[in-house]
Image 1 (tube, rainbow, N blue to C red):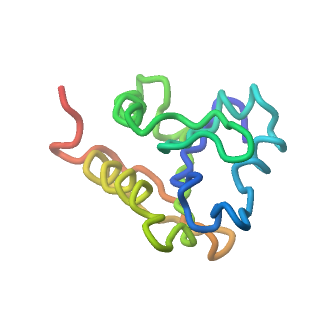
Image 2: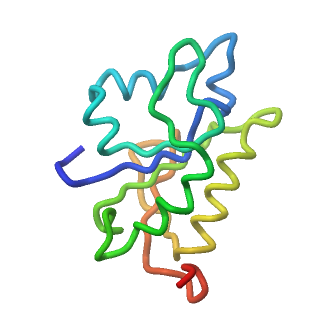
Image 3: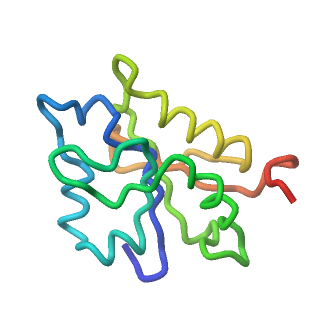
Length: 137
């Protein structure tokens, strides 16, 4: 991650690959690779759980609205500096509901454009401006 850039990962501990019996550890691997400070400063994950075997700096779902309020050219997270990834494997019995709700809210507020990704594991999404009725004033 380049300095000043941020990552919004539409993925959390409720995604099916993170099931309790055989978790893939995507978030733990990212956390260990970046280190605590860099992860906290640049990676944004929202979910109802922050702990499984260990706890991670996952933001509560209730904070997603205020995070999106800051996604603007003059805000703490300009859209040009935000990379959004939506992993395609976040599904399974009841597993995708939180992530689907986050994606729906993102789409309600912003015009989204899928962009080429390095593989089929995740879709990279770019923000192409606000929806006409997207942001409360």
